[in-house]
Image (cartoon, rainbow, N blue to C red):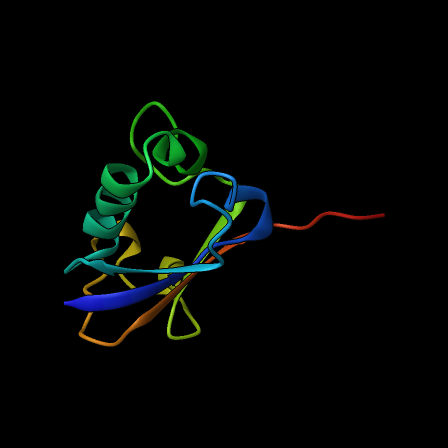
Length: 91
């Protein structure tokens, strides 16, 4: 499935300053692996040592938070848009 991944500004240094990339992936997990194949080093910024998404990252598939779907096992369809959004804290 061809999907579009929106890359947040802090991670664009890994994607040659691209704000979005097109990838082939059937699940969010496959998308993470494909990102690392095309942009080595990005996966370490997105996942912990156990391969789980870092707590300060939110991932959305077509505006749906994957925490309310199937997490990294969330199935992707052709044309889906995946947004990687760093959590923002303030005071």
